[in-house]
Image 1: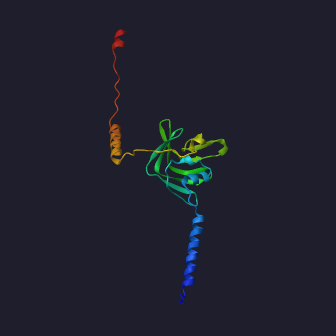
Image 2: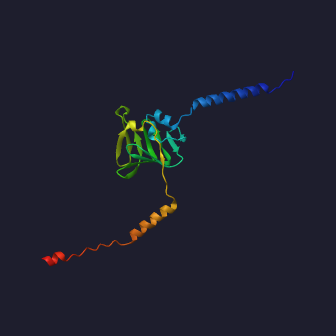
Length: 185
């Protein structure tokens, strides 16, 4: 019979490695970003459908990557940049960047989202100077997000040139001279 002096050590090493891989996979279960939102007391529909890549660290800081910038329709329209980030706490997201909300034809960057009292059925979007409330039920499920055309630098250059040209020209006001009223008197 042949004896391998290192065989028991090899078996023990293989056993420990396999045990560690099982323990590690149980310690860090894979959740989707939607499940993470729900675990933090937030509705899953805060982010659009199709998010597959995200990071989340122990402090709650997260970053979500979308394939492209897009808009989704809720009570108002929401615009999502390709990268959305913030700090996730129970019932709120602080330091948010990458989401804008439209109101009265203007776009406002959303700085914070919070659910103060879940039973109230309200969710609050803070855009810095004002906070707007929405129905929590509007955000229960992730929405389809339509791709947004992002103008290239050439388009931006034309806009800047046009604005500069308008600013450099003097606006002239010339009153219409109507002598018909004077001659009648």
